[in-house]
Image 1 (tube, one colour):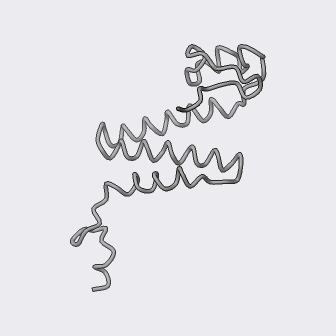
Image 2 (cartoon, rainbow, N blue to C red):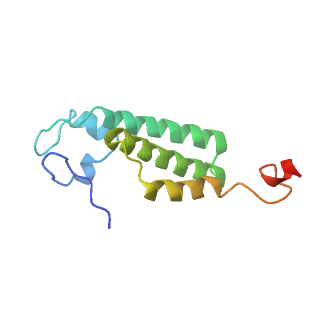
Image 3 (cartoon, rainbow, N blue to C red):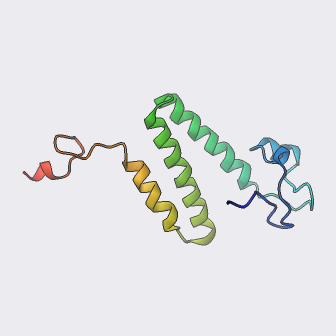
Length: 121
């Protein structure tokens, strides 16, 4: 099972009421409820940016399979980018499934505009 959200300083689990994107950061004034350690400003920026990207994707594609693939791709790419910024290491366990999910809706067979081999025939 995945570990619960926790304060990186005191390791105290974050309660559900304190885990609402952006709003919790504002209500807690950017500090942990338990140890008063500062929460990085990038956290609400990433949360708000993700919400904007998701809203734009849904506005463009509606509630569709394409939108679902794009939302998963956005989420994975953001996670990969943030981990890369912190560690300068990209986790293959995220890239491999992300690639499969991103490419799954494209028809690759003969007669498709995405077909690779036809241009050389």
